[in-house]
Length: 73
Image 1 (cartoon, rainbow, N blue to C red):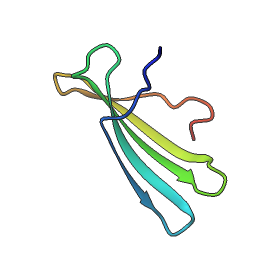
Image 2: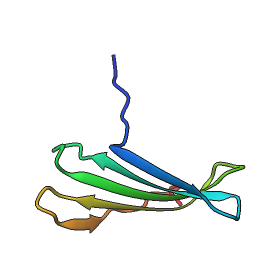
Image 3: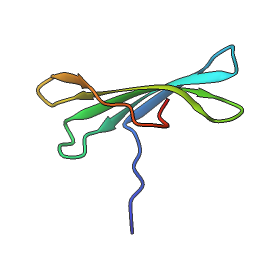
């Protein structure tokens, strides 16, 4: 049975223009000490992603921006 993947934590704030912004921190795939920080701006009504930024943080503290894929905003 496959276990669902959940972020370490997530914060969400609704904005005045009927959208919301969220910040989530995920454990790394290869090393749990690595993290992926994800910031997403989505429309509330249509659920479409307007923008997304993802940053990888290695266990030694180095940061790098992850690529945005088509459909990610």
